[in-house]
Image (cartoon, rainbow, N blue to C red; front, side):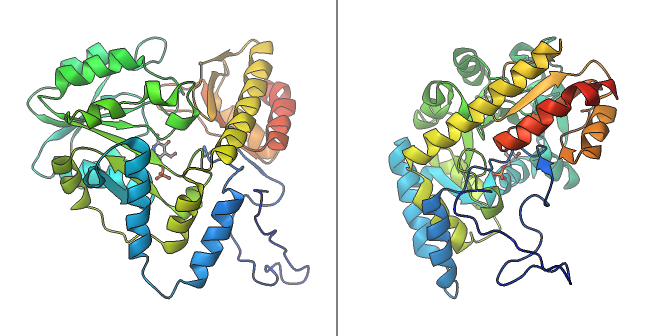
Length: 360
Ligand SMILES: Cc1ncc(COP(=O)(O)O)c(C=O)c1O
């Protein structure tokens, strides 16, 4: 259980939660939830306390706290306030950008494999998606991507590090790519896992946001901050791009989420502790998989992508029988499986089940 979280007690007779606990939050009892790239070490104690106290002030709109968070983001990232759009998770900001950039018929260009949820949202509104094949090592092929950025494309969407591969692009190569194409289309770099990379600052494209290039960087409180259920994220881009994003943002951020974000944004002790546990779990999973002869991709995130050399859906089902939840196959990659870094005890269950689940 996350530090500071209240246990959900379920009464014997009714199966209903007792006291103030509410049903449906967190992993069901007895399960190892390793399918969604959440961070079970959050929220931080400070975030939980701030969120609770903001709940007590829940009668009031949280407008001043939003300005407070914007100030903190501006200061930490050395950008003006009007470069920042805060949204309900980065997902909302990414949907807003995808919708705004494609409203007039422009297409989105992306690699064949990326976290495409928000682009699919734009597709449902009529947007067109064009994709470039991946390299054989499942890294993003920037040359192939550049070739498909023609006049019909208004937005290029890259996830870095990528999901589901966990791979990080070489920052110099990505920067050079962006500088080549930003005259033709805006480049959106989703950096949801940036804080888990070996060199967060060096691997970010924020420097060219500061330079006023045609680029958007997104970040979230859902990953290293362990606040996926509290729904806070933000996009950073020069003023005119930010105005376009903001014009499509629909929600007013929830007060408890904002309070938790403010309380944990600069909590370095929590961040490094959280990161250390995630990396410890990642090392354990990679070692176990490799010792069984499986290929794992180098991950810079809180998940590992591995070739299980068999049907990844059947492998997922075998794990599920043991109440361990992981992802099934991705389109075009029937033998690749993704596992998220949950609590160490849950990862130990995964590692222990690995040989038998692979046998099927
Ligand atoms: C690459 C990437 N971006 C964004 C998100 C969504 O995050 P949020 O909770 O901030 O909407 C995810 C969630 O898994 C993700 O993997």
